[in-house]
Structures are given as structure tokens and as C-alpha cells.
Amino acid sequence: MLKLALDGPSLAVRDYFTPNDEAQLSETDADLGSSGPLLLPDQPGSHPHVLLQPGKGSNIYVIDRDRMGKFQRDHDAIVQKVPMAGGGYGAMAYWNRHVFFACSDDSLRAYAVENGNYD
Image (cartoon, rainbow, N blue to C red):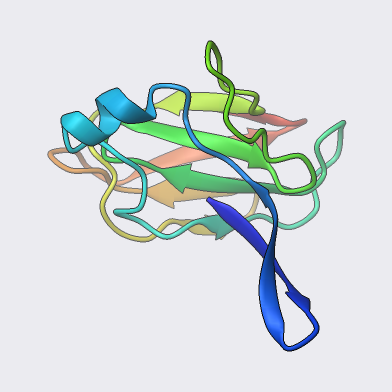
């Protein structure tokens, strides 16, 4: 995940996130990028600006857009990692403090967004 900004006539990388197990995710074709990110409206709490990124590895990554976490060798410096029942392919939707998403081999689920927690 990249955070880009204009730097004169070109784009510059301002921040990024890479999962700490990126090599394993890549080897098993479980990497990020099969779905687009979802930018949530401002949230209460210590992480008001978050994005959600589902991955093929059956997790939703909750990432602080102000401090994306970069690459950490032994852990992910992110807000939360939410498990899913299958791989993430497709778009997420946000409405009324809920995120809706259907991962592979599963039905549509609603994930509650409440007080900085995503369940």
C-alpha cells in the first residue's frame, strides 16, 4: 500500500505498508492487491484516518493513513488485522458504521465499526 502525493510535476511516496510476512504471502499467492482499499470517514479515537485493505490471505488490514506502518520484520505496525472466512476479491462498502464485504466461498458479512474497533 502506498501513500502518494504530488511533488512538483511528479508523484512521491510519502508513506507505505507492507505486511511482515510478505514473502510467504507472495509465495502462496495470498498477497494484497486483489481488492481495492476502502477509505473510511473520520473515526473517533487514536486512529481517526483509517483504510481497510482485504487480502487474498483471509485478513482485512486496518491501516492508519497517517502512520501506515512501513515494513517491520517481526510484526505489522497497523491498527488491527481482522480475520475473514476466505480470500478477499472485490470491493468493500461502508454504511451506517458497518463495512460490508463478501470474501470467496462465504456470504456477505457486516463488520461493525465502533470506537476504533473493527469486528
